[in-house]
Amino acid sequence: MRTGFPNAKPGMVIGLLGGSFDPAHEGHVHITHEALKRIGLDRVWWLVSPGNPLKARQPAPMPARIAQARRMLKDDPRVVVSDIEARLGTRFTADTIARLQELYPGVSFVWLMGADNLAQFHKWDRWREIMERVPVGVLARPGSGLKARLSVAAQVYRGNRVARGENLAHRNGPAWVFVNVPMSAASSSEIRAKGQWKP
Ligand SMILES: Nc1ncnc2c1ncn2[C@@H]1O[C@H](COP(=O)(O)OP(=O)(O)OP(=O)(O)O)[C@@H](O)[C@H]1O
Ligand SMILES: O=C(O)c1ccc[n+]([C@@H]2O[C@H](COP(=O)([O-])O)[C@@H](O)[C@H]2O)c1
Image (cartoon, rainbow, N blue to C red):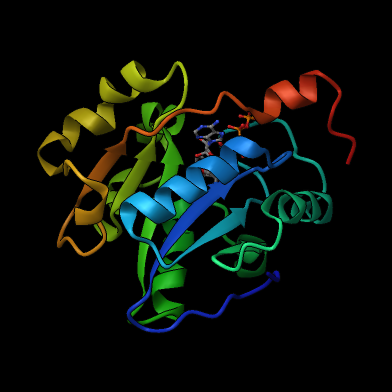
């Protein structure tokens, strides 16, 4: 694992898990392993965000969050921790994906997120553009299943939902899957609230 611009060969399918990772926890590791398996990804890149555009609170400094993310992953060669958004100068996911598609021709990207994020996905900048650019894998999260299924994005794209993860990566046009995995209740806000994260 290293930071910066990761290597990828044409033909690879790479899952992008964007997040604050403030701090990374076993829920992130769990959904990453499930996405690798169920969506048939070659790699997952953790995009450690300079800051979620919808969150007022500033996260801990990037180096501390990256170091903690690496510790959580225990040198899994399939997962790369990257500060790519800071390097690209992008903050909005639509811009990050557009730049990655330019930089990595022939590589297929899949956007990954927990079900809590699908519930508010329609508030993201150019969210329909994201749906048009890449398939989206939504991973179950405790307490968010119903909200995700009833969300604006799920309604608008109800005809584009595929039943199984392995059918997702090479679809033409918008496609998304709800991956109904065993769930982890871990959350960064709970870890912070308990004072267990001292960056
Ligand atoms: N336990 C979990 N189960 C499923 N998805 C998760 C889980 N934890 C985080 N995610 C997903 O991982 C991505 C990055 O999450 P993030 O770094 O914001 O962690 P978080 O625990 O959601 O943080 P916070 O509690 O501060 O909102 C998001 O798409 C989020 O939905
Ligand atoms: O592009 C946007 O408008 C947008 C709005 C909210 C969240 N995101 C991205 O979603 C990812 C998850 O954010 P977070 O804070 O829940 O970890 C992270 O990569 C954010 O940059 C992106």
